Length: 135
Image 1 (cartoon, rainbow, N blue to C red):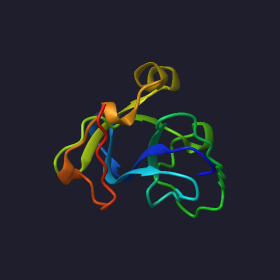
Image 2 (cartoon, rainbow, N blue to C red; image 1 turned 60 degrees about the horizontal axis):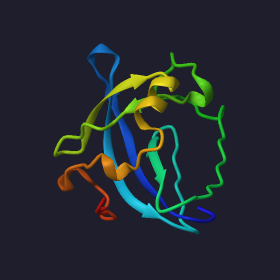
Image 3 (cartoon, helix red, strand yellow; image 1 turned 180 degrees about the horizontal axis):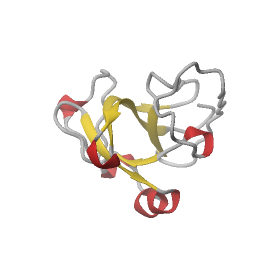
Image 4 (cartoon, one colour; image 1 turned 90 degrees about the vertical axis):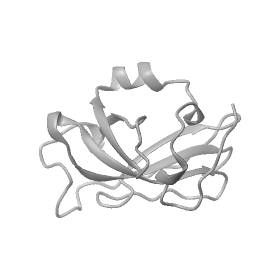
């Protein structure tokens, strides 16, 4: 993070579910500010969702691809290996079965919305940085 604040949720792939949905586990729900870091790889904290918190935020991002020996989904050829998911239904154990969306549908559902509008059960978060946001 360079400036501002973001509300971040990080997830890890669990498995490809029946019907093409993707199961992910919520591992972090936090507010990040200047100097904080998000680090994701193909096999660790590889799904993330964030929104600005209280105003503009600036994030510096580097995306290094092509060095992995294996990838989670060999068949997916989207931009930067990116998929758009709907992780809004998280169970008490932190697992969300996510519908895979195209970019336009994802923007329709989530653009200009705060993550605080999509609460998750307190027991669902593995990381102790769990936060609560009042709207």
